[in-house]
Each structure stands twice: as C-alpha cells, then as structure tokens.
Length: 176
Image 1: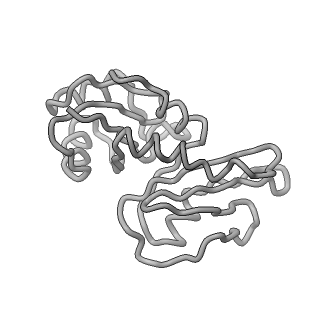
Image 2: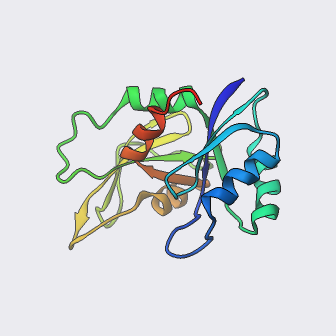
Image 3: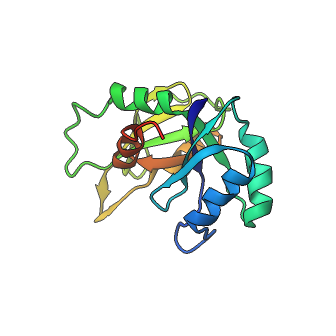
C-alpha cells in the first residue's frame, strides 16, 4: 500500500463549498481507499491505496457524493516530504514570511520564467519543481496577496495552494 495526499481545491473557503471533514473522510472510504484521515478543514486528505489513484475518478465520484465541485490534486506522501526537504524558502528575507506551495493538476499551458513578481507586487513566484510552484506573499497596502489565481491565470492551469506550515504538517504525519 502506498500513501497519498489529496488536495481539494476551493472547499471551505469564504463560506463556499462547505464540506464537513467527517463527510469527506467517509466519501474517500466509500471508494475503497484505506486508512483515510483529514488534516485541517481546508480539504487535505491522507489515505492509502494499493494502486495509484486517478484524480479525475476521485473528482467525479466525490463531487457527486458530496454535492460540490472541487478539483482534486494528488501527490504521494513521498512527494510532499521531498517538497519540504527542498525548502526554497530557507534563505528568504520576507517579513513576515507568508510562504505557499501551489500544486498544479498538469503541465501548464503557458511557460512562465521564474522568478516572477505579480503586477501588484503582492505575489512572488520563486521556484518551480515539476507540478509544484513555491511563492512568497508580500504585504501591499496592508494586505497580502494569495498566489492561486495569479498562478492559474499566468500558467493557464488548475491549481490549489497551501501555506507552508500546512505542507510541513502533512509531511510530518507518520505512517497511518
């Protein structure tokens, strides 16, 4: 059995696409996935599977069962741990630090040269590895940027973003 993390895009954000974590857990279990647990209330699900799960299949089945449209992006737990080991933020001077990882669903339609700063200057993309983009959010006029929409529009791809502390937390979860 291999361990995976499913990142659901856009659930429990701003009062939209509300899903109880117990329902999310039950939904994954109903698909025959083993040792399912959730992490935080932002759509992070850890589970085991004998074969590599397909995000499209999970999207379709869970969307119907839960009544929400929330694309699912998958990574193995080893991939999540290697993201934390890479840590391109270690030399950052951002103050206060607002670090994010965006998980893309597929190779982007557009090629974007990194590093790149958003037009507002509130989001800085600092590193890309495979389907994962690392970014820093900067305060502009008292508010911080959030990288997801900037990345989706820049790369023409679906993605979901998690803060660095959440990614670290997921990487530290011991074998279920």
